[in-house]
Image (cartoon, rainbow, N blue to C red; front, side):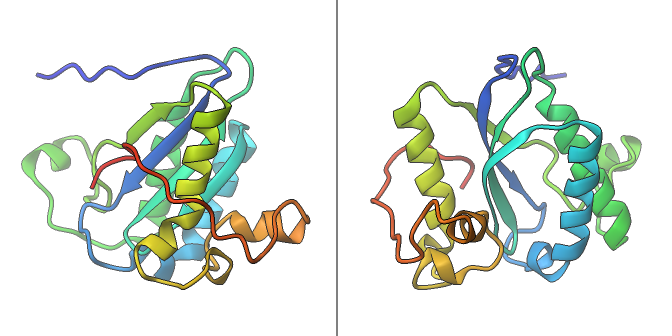
Length: 175
């Protein structure tokens, strides 16, 4: 049995990539209401600050800052994934391992996480998050993608809707 270790910094800021098991579909945007509700309920129980988030058809990216003394991001993702899965209730082909662990097969078992080191690292991951729908060819401008915290920042006047972001290179999650 493998022992998967994650970096844990209480009160830290983290970047995540969370994928569906079946890539190429559109379940996350088709069922955006269920995802938002799963997310809302989880934040109500275990608060954190969402710095940025983008939901694409088959995966999502998020940048979170946890409360002081708290590093339980895995539990938060477990709750979000479980609630979403129960809500959409779609049966999927499952491996024996997923059946034994009572997983429904919608999500990839794990997720990718990166601990943010400094302001430059934060800005690179924020830019990557917001520019991801453009990078995937879903829209021409970040402002045109409706499933992103970018919209929140535009409404609050913290970023211009014409923002395009700089090109970002680096390791930003699973392919």
